[in-house]
Image (cartoon, rainbow, N blue to C red; front, side):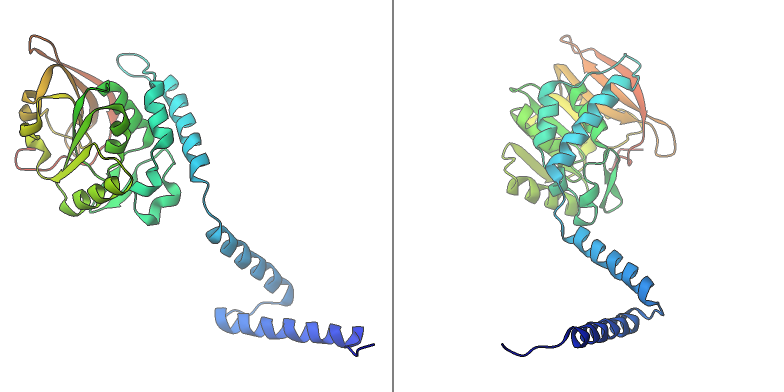
Length: 277
């Protein structure tokens, strides 16, 4: 029989290792903790490490996000009544990886129903508002859509499978570049992003079947109205930066007459550019 430590010797060895670990943790953290408190501290540290290392269930979170949107759509009052979200829009939102279109620092919050910072003083809208604005735009497979305010690219990504083409303008050059790169990497090939003043629209690709503006304007920009097709719809937050904004639906009838309705109080970052005041 080979030799080995006695039970008493093994116990002493384990205690010695525990005391050594205790001293190392105390020195590293600068704490004075008892053995019992150290055990709790180590358990908390290991649990925290495991939580950081564990991959987030983004797919499950995305499905829960869509369930929240459905619930809100049934309960949030609009001036025109309740607004159900089409199944095709909900399907798009179940597929678009929102966590891939936000900064890494807020990735774990990507599917919470609230705005998120995306840098440069800008935010990405809460998912319910993205769904509602998409619904109000009434996208169709043959439509060409203009988005003003690309931001992270999420709204454009949601529109992408629902329409033929999305043209998106972002006035903050680094955001335009980042969003364009991310959208291409994710395979949204029918989205074109450029850096520019969204107030002026993108006339060379107009007129548009619908226009979605993701920044608050003090008034409805006339160039965007001009670039809206007869029968088209524009969704835009209207109101000054310090005033109450209202999500506004602008419709141009087949005769070219413009009709405007305020639907819901909202808060967006301001639309910026030469003619926005």
